[in-house]
Length: 459
Ligand code: FES
Ligand code: FE
Image (cartoon, rainbow, N blue to C red; front, side):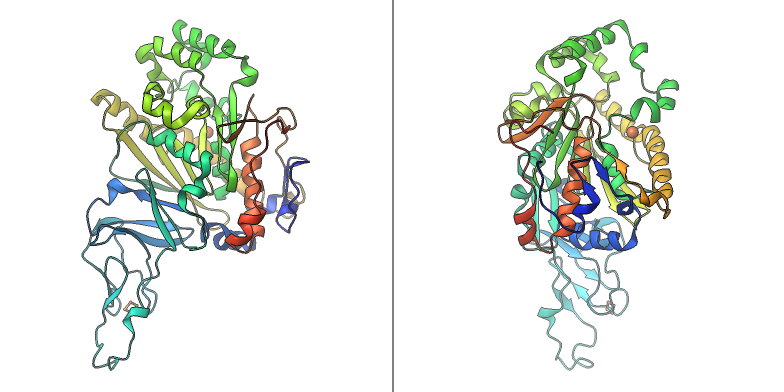
């Protein structure tokens, strides 16, 4: 047995039998603990630094359900401020993004500086008799704010480990798989839409390479995405090489497991497979991902031996997914609703033609108009509805795929397995979820969270 921490939420996730209690997707009380113990504690992605380059630039983001203002103050420092006036709680910023000199509350006019300090109070002399201690009534500030390669994160908990330590080697690898694609620029307009699902089902699905042929059959049938058997002869050759490249289909997938619940799940892409793709030249455009950045010396140095071959989907716990040139947030909106945000990046180095392909894919794969996300969202919605019932909740979900089959490899401080399609990243995520939920502080979580599996552990 690899895991031995026990607590009330640990009983809902049994990694030894691969079972997860359905109530975690439906129960209002559990959801409220998530807001407290996961979102108010974790490092949450805010925005990209290119969205707020100048003093006064701001972008409204969320920590759990709470609106926060990510901004840059007059000194050029990043600030993350709770968007709630200290007087009667009104939002002090209504625009989703823009530039401001200060934040004026529209209720009674308290005014806050870009660093959150209370700088103006109507009637300060006549009504407050100069007795209000303005230094104590600034906007609530994040406990810590930091940027990783231009990606801005914030945590409300000052006891959280620093961002780089929080990410650890697996979280950093996940971020690097996007950051190393080039000199990234955000395409204007973050796509936002609501799906009637529990946020964890959306996270679960990003690791899921089992559903595509069924869930996305309509995308394949429509011709929007090629089916393997309908690929050109060159692509069939690529598929053949990939299949026999290093161990056959049984090792085509890689699951990478990190501390605090970070994980990466999906295909691996070894040198032989990358060389086969390179020979196909622009035909790789028909595949979902442009992986040519992996040939750059800097990418190889940063990603290391494990990362350079890792082509799956990273999730930075709890809710940040990177795919292709996009990044998605799965924001909780109650146990049965999730707000999905899509940020799209284009490396400045790419051709105009490639830029168009990236933006076309961003609009047509995911987001509200995305063919794949419509397929996925329908399933997540129905799963959420069908798990609400008292009878349904008597029966756990099954995460037994591939359990106990594969010994763990540890290389460059990263634990991973190369295997077939599996559910290890999902189970790892739920296990981390339970550990976060059981811990009543960062101090406790640091003590009780599971370390990534050791070399040779059979998972
Ligand atoms: Fe903001 Fe009164 S609620 S000034
Ligand atoms: Fe999907």
